[in-house]
Length: 504
Image 1: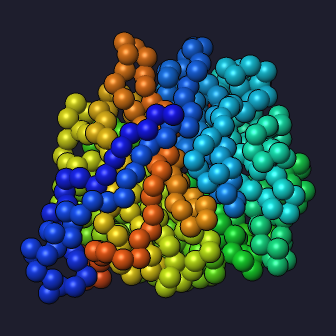
Image 2: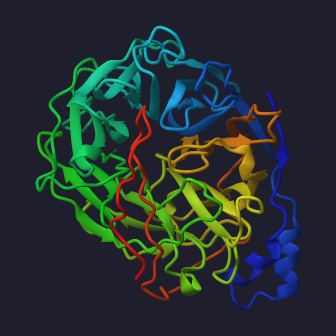
């Protein structure tokens, strides 16, 4: 296992001015931040072994990770193909809280991995069905020549170590995009054991669709639209303890829709917030897609990149809103990773919440990517992975930790939407310990990449020490760069979807 020591370095003095106690003198603050943070190391959990064309090898991108007890299952693209998808979908499973991992590749899915019917696959997302004791990975199948089913689901009944050939979800389509999966694993819920898949159809302008399974993912119900046949992308369904499903999603802004009847019908989306986003530099693939999580009592959090707290929309913070019912949402709040006067640009967040915590004592953790300088080019941008946490439901935040970087953008594979680490990452808790899975790149060897999946060991959610707050921060403007609109994953190069929004 590749372990790279990392600790909080550089930029510490920038955080001093956000200490919660304003009377704390500067000397004392500097002393507090000069203390050593707990040792954090990276563990590589998988790498790309393939060489088959047209994949860009060795690359792994776009991970998701989910935990149940001490078991964690991650899934990710392996061997990224520039026009769309990947050579295979990789998986990695840990049963000891993320210390050691076993990994492999989903069978019966792609030709690149052998035995599968599809030219590529994309957008893996993980779910666990406690009622039926089944792990699931949903993916988008991609063909160069024919239509495919909208989404497929691979199942594991042995704890995430062997996987069945995929089960079809939804009708055949020319393309589908941004699927996600979740299961209701609360034994007291009236819909315990229901699993829900969300995706959108680019051929109908990103029409939102949902499908439900009640038998552990063996069969799936019809593709069902929202009440108003709304369009959106990047929905991440979550299940509250009472069985209500809440789906935060990017529409014309950040929105959410719900089901209170086990997926029999879905509401029209309600507004969470408008989007004000800075276009990330260097041609990197990113944008304000939401990342979402739910605490132990059912409060839903949605996080995205946003520039409303930055002068002239010059760079992105990570911001969030919360809801207890999926209908009424809190005001947008900034995560105080660094001061609003900094040049740091933050994007691609992955939020997780310890399910044993909730409300004012919720343990919240976010992994994310960032540039130290937002004004950079493909040649000069330097990419990092960061981590930040809160032990009190977002009232204050612990100082951030840099986990990986600097990475040069030329080390990243290309995609139909730019240089790629992924459209999303995630954070999962096992016994109170947060883990993220994310792509880390190093210098290429000739034309061969060196980008693999990693997780961080040694992260915590401290309940003591210096704290950061954004309580006094106010939005500064209504400005936004044009919101980046992704072309859907296809086996053949797609036409660009027209941008629906422009700078204000």
